[in-house]
Length: 165
Image (cartoon, rainbow, N blue to C red; front, top):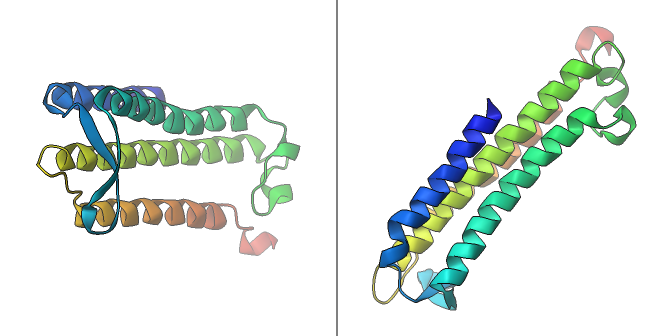
């Protein structure tokens, strides 16, 4: 199921690039400072290649890690209460749960990258280019919230049950 969702995520990034590629300026603002003012540029082609490469690499790396977690020996997995959760009777479900969480994090990372890319595209559709700082902060806070939620989930999910503590 996650493969289908990841494929949809990648298709969304390709559609996004395809929908705007013709309209983008030959030189794009790709880095922005205070006030959304650009202070770094690259060619349109460079931007597209970098974005798609980064978009495929980062979520893909998390997907690969999730697959790897399912194949690693328990000695190489580090979670809270490791002895308890990676005991023979719990290891399969624990690893499956951890891999699922990593896949969700990868999907959320991909959505964050798509959102930020859209802000960069939008910034380059006006003259002079200006990045929507409110949107950037909104997406950044949402992504930080996602990461904190993932870490809290790991902490709560892999705590030792009270009756066996």
